[in-house]
Image (cartoon, rainbow, N blue to C red; front, side, top):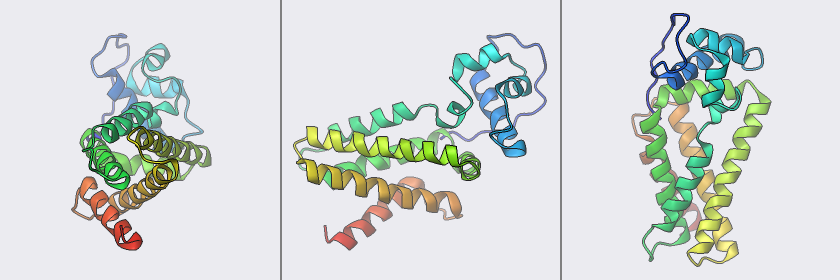
Length: 202
């Protein structure tokens, strides 16, 4: 995920085609969620802080939750595509690991650790958002299992590899977000899968 700079003091009256509208709306929303909480923030307030209109907001986000979850379907598609293009000799767990390391590269490259930490703190304060995050992770597991079955893995092996892989990802992600470990997210994902293989003897 691309590193976000803190932008404040947007001029008023900006037109609907102002450049970087999506990133300005995103940063405005994050600032408000951090300052007054997700539930207490309205779309109108986000748009006003960004110097844009509510109509412009809805051109980029279907609702205020999508500021935090926009692009989730694209990540699910990426996982399936990465599994499909893994080497033919790769085991279900190896294909899953490769897909999740690619996802880690994308997350780190698009936003960066600081943004992800901010997002995680916002989610931690809201049970509804936490539930939405779990639904997102479940969709990753389902997509991985389906892609593994398409490669020829039986249902049990596909489901186990997908579920174990997402669990390994979550361990690595939590470490990346909560610590100052200098390793990149993909490196931590690699370590997490190494630990998983040690546990299972795979």
